[in-house]
Length: 137
Image 1 (cartoon, rainbow, N blue to C red):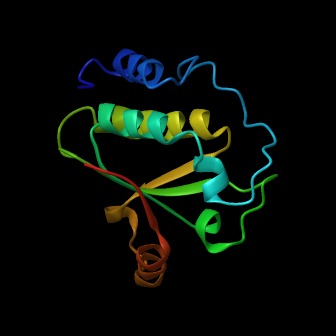
Image 2: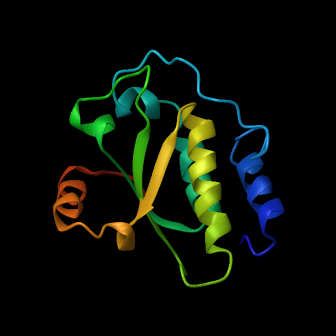
């Protein structure tokens, strides 16, 4: 769906309700939330649309957003993503589109990693044990 490169990712973000596209991203503002549940509330549809349009197979949240150390003033949100057809051209655009779209929707920094990037076995175990599902197709 994103063979058209950056323009297609921008259009996908727009269709998912993520206004302003990639270039005009504002930095996140203060949010009165203390956990992933507070961030997620009311944004499920936008996140699901973004994931579907960028051909995400599975998206999970991990880190302080789900383990209790979340600071609404400074914490980012960590995600583990798996894409359909990850070996097809355009995966970099889809990966960056996902990260930038999540930041815009959640109004805070979002870090996205993939399973192959989980090289450290201890870190991999922690992520797998504590992550919570956000989206699956």
